[in-house]
Image 1 (spheres, rainbow, N blue to C red):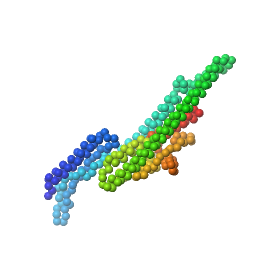
Image 2: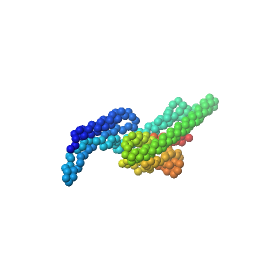
Image 3: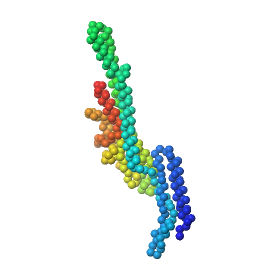
Image 4: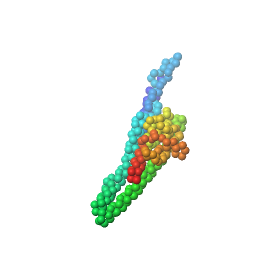
Length: 300
């Protein structure tokens, strides 16, 4: 017969561990990347009985079967998509605002300088024998040339700054993907040895969140918790992370009518182009670069 004291003891131990999990959640409420845990309680079943014995239906108490993370793959996927779209718009807007500052009407913008130059030419045409309008027209022409040169230099500086920011974002993406591949390897080792990889899963999700800010991705998870990541929101894009292997990303400048930057995979080897990367900070910077290139062509 099962002792009531044994059942009570199992209950105290199980709920003490549950309270410890709750305390851990409270203690880490402000910890970046921490995901709430829940204690999964299961009944400790009694014997099943046999030919000459009757099964004990009263049970042997309760135990903590597992400590699970509160993880919802669907909500996580939506969050990653929203994050990528926001970062794309934000990075594009920041660069376009700088472009607008160069081109908005003012006292010394190109539009004003061109207007002043042609007005001075009209004054010369109205009084061709007068030297004063000619001097003013020459001065206006010099000012217009300086405005063109100054605008061109500043636009080239903005284009270079955009390229530098894109290179930094791509370098960050490659660093994060290598780290996630390493975490995948640790998760697999922990699950094989029977250890709880909850802290590694938190780190996994944090890395995926940081990657989604740079590029739109679609993660999928194995039953061991390993995250495989593809580029793009379709889920069938090129592989970025597969188990403990990661693919490097790079970019090249496009000189066709579309302009912008072309994202490539394996920049030191196959240089495979991909059009799947359509959101995230890198995509926003690529679009901004194309806009800046278009304005430079128009100024020229």
